[in-house]
Image (cartoon, rainbow, N blue to C red; front, top):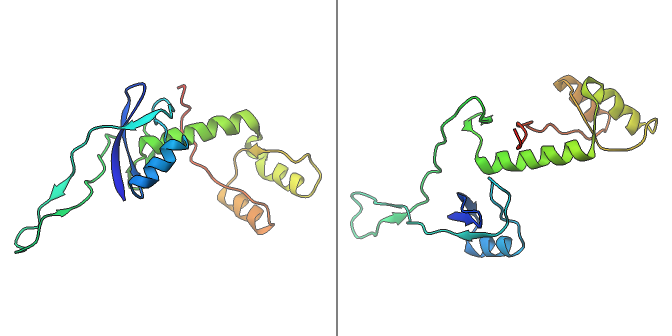
Amino acid sequence: MIRFSLRCDNAHEFESWFKDSAAYDRMAAAGLVDCPVCGDTRVSKALMAPAIRKTPGVKGRAPAAVPAEPPKAEADSQTPRLAAGPMPAQVVALLQRMRQEIEKNCDYLGKDFAKEARRIHEGEAEPRGIYGEATEAEAEALREEGIEVARLPWVPRADG
């Protein structure tokens, strides 16, 4: 794995991890690397210094190059969190785009989600994208009935 410092054409700087340099090149050429702040896909590598850690007391060996730890972001009440800490900005941006697409293309059903999912599955309602609220027990019951459901972290909208 390799970490690159990146910059979009709007001068936003961010970091991202890739399998290797060739993976970054392929993804960037395909427009799959985007700025977590503005979504710009015109991204280039920024200047960065390697993180080198010396291995003390090992005679005859050069210091080992190791990836530096990702920066620890300050948490606040507006920052979505993972179990281990604040959610990375790129993940938040991706989830915000997913939320935008879901809200644009699917019907919100609130607490009637499980009931309508069953109706669609049984052919009693028009097949369409839906989203809403379900308890863990309701979601598990839907899965047991062969109805595909997924839980997504519902982050605040990108526009505030």
